[in-house]
Length: 205
Length: 287
Image 1 (cartoon, one colour):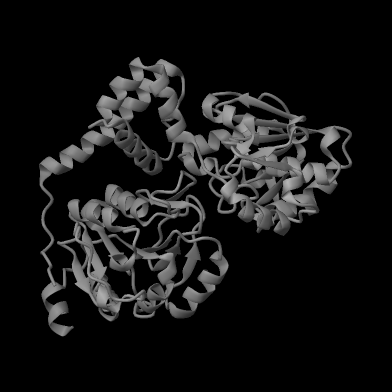
Image 2: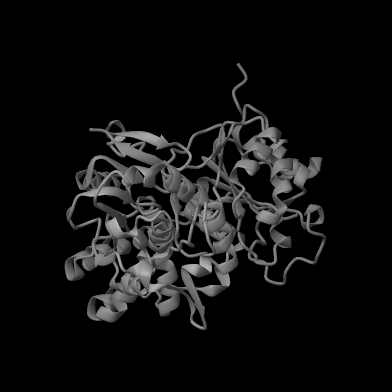
């Protein structure tokens, strides 16, 4: 773990936003990620559960219990604020614009609304290379939601972090033959939060 | 483990992405001038995603190619308009909203001899029939007229037909009961081979009409306006315009219903309304 972080650590100050996607069935992965983030984490973070249905309130309460950062359920046109977890509501797509978040009731994408791909793609469009995208449980999700969006983030020079399938919740499986995320940083779940934390070295004064 | 240091993105690729934005501007300009449908004020991120989807479906390589196609072919334009503007809502989406509508708003309507309700941006009609069912069960059908509008003729035709996919019946039934349903949903919808069809009695007092919130004006005064999950698709300026239009169209103490994740913040009309129910996002226009 130590050597992985040493090799991979990017410079701070190069990113403006962190977008995190997980399949709805693997929501505990997000709790385990959030618990590792320090309260002084200063970037805006957008968290989405692919295909989530209902239960927004329960999810919010559960995540807040694990997070030192405030977790807010997104309302349409909410400004993107630093040091906050913006939680995508169920049954809408969530998209990133330059300075705010936008919801959409367009048709599900490959059966999912919210769609992780839609969020990641919009983040790549709005923030280009200044996006950090984290895909949790991605290799385990049969739908592959998030992979195309992550590939677009990568294509625009953003940083893509994929959870190592060995720690994923649904059970280990060989990574799919199609590997659009070959250039991603693959980390164990426990390594992701410390790694993401290095992206915004907070001022200690 | 593979990791590559952050690469400087090639400027050619950056230019290419800039071209897509320019092409979208030109497409929307072309559509507005050729057909009068104005999508220029829509939220760009979601619109861009839908345009890319349309490119895939039409098998076209660029937004410019799509523009050339739709400017010459009105039926392709109708398809595109539907693809860019159709929103998908099940019946009784957010049952809590309908329960509050039933308990807090419909009793107010009893005090009026005649009531007009506008469902602005009705899409394929699920919200219209959900509301019509409530009115029927509360014995208000006879004195309420529902005006259901959408900008797309294709979508309106579907709404008017009142046919909805039957595989969702179980979900709809559960939400209907959560929304305070007094009977069975199948008392209101006929289950047939082509789907769920709203019974004729539900449609009797509904008027369907084409209306574009982006370009058309107020056409009546209403006691209740439901405009749920419509303005989420609009940018800030268009959203303000639509709030102005709705405000003009709402009578004194009229009720405005927004989607579950919408607020009046940034609408320019925050001071014109009081919240009737925070959770349901129901507002009452002040005098």
